[in-house]
Amino acid sequence: MASRRGQMLDGVLLLDKPEGLSSNHALQRAKRTVDARKAGHTGTLDPFATGLLICCFGRATKISAAMLEADKVYEATLAFGEETDSGDLTGHVTARAPDDFAGVDAAALEAALAPFRGEIEQIPPMVSALKRDGRPLYEYARQGIELERPPRRIVIHALELLACDGRSARLRVHCSKGTYVRTLAQDIGRRLGCLAHLSALRRTAVGPFSIEQAVGLEALQAMEAPAAALIPLHALPDGLRPASASTEDNIL
Image 1 (spheres, rainbow, N blue to C red):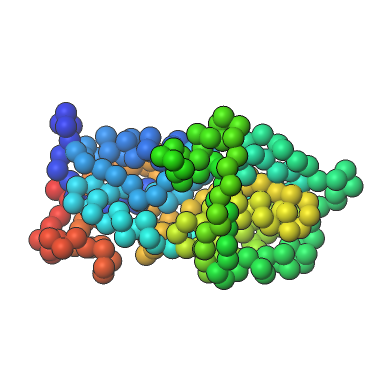
Image 2: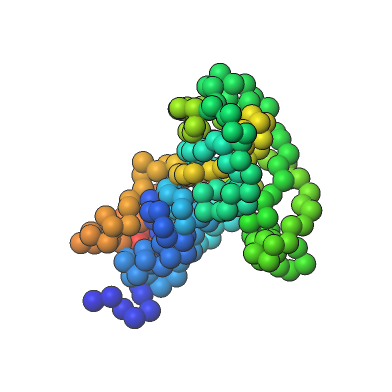
């Protein structure tokens, strides 16, 4: 039987977060499932997004800072023809393409992607957790207030067109920390002149960890011994092992 406060587990769970759950809700479900006392995650995914959520338990929470600095890889789906106030499908439409908009040509899209590769400047969205005067920007956005935000330097290491049907496109984005993929989608739409928003997002890698290594929440909950899904401290990649970890450490 699970203990009330949970066990003192040390390890990392690579969770494939489902659509519809906040990152914290997914973490708390995983925490209860493995019966852990202490847990945290290393980078938020919006509820509509899916994919790799790194959940750290016990002493593994010490790697959180390093993982926040790590590069990330996403598969992003852009819907052309409309821009929203949030930059994604959850927001309200604020602008539309002209009535004669007939879709985006793949060659034109490829050309539009070129300026977004490498080191670029990006203005963070109002629906972000960045703070102004002690308050996150999204609180101002909820009140209908838009503040001027200085651009930030980010790096798009790779931006690959995976598919395009004229009305939508799927991109692979390998980016540095601090990158807002919703803003990237919006900026690409503006460059094309047809507007765009993010209609789906899946995180496929964070630093050395890949979605292929992850377990889904339902699969985790169905395991007879779900704590066995944790990566023990001694098995973490070089540079991520807490200083106190040794080959004697295990998840129990």
